[in-house]
Length: 192
Image 1 (cartoon, helix red, strand yellow):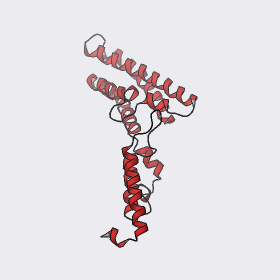
Image 2 (image 1 turned 30 degrees about the vertical axis):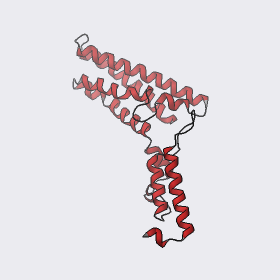
Image 3 (image 1 turned 135 degrees about the vertical axis):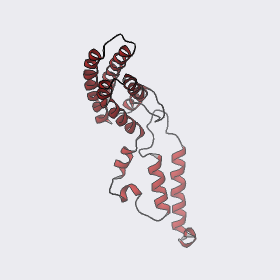
Image 4 (image 1 turned 180 degrees about the horizontal axis):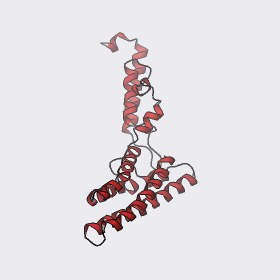
């Protein structure tokens, strides 16, 4: 009913906009280039807002800029922030003797550093798409430091689990490794 009430040029333009937005979501980016600047949900929200005659997608209507909405919806950044929160909780897990939770935190974080899993991207692949060589080098260095810290955490937790190392001795390794891991994670997030 809404489409029939609109003028023919407006309807044609709206349909073209919705079709273009839909096709851009289905077409993968060319090999070696980054994907769309906005996540699919933001594109769909913009197309739906245009089709309904609104001038702004819901993200802007609630006071957020579209770029802030795109960054906050970036799956890799969301997962990295979740991993950072998990790493920050590791000392509490170690103090309570929950070494399995420490190892689970490590295993949760590792795929985002190298593998293109659920998010479709990894820190390594995102670093390759950064514009400056300095930014690429910084992210890859921070990634390496984070991997070393996570390996130390996992090794310490495993040693306690099999009874090779007393928990008090492993707690010292946990404290240093967590500090190093958080600094590396912050460095990675700062570049993205």
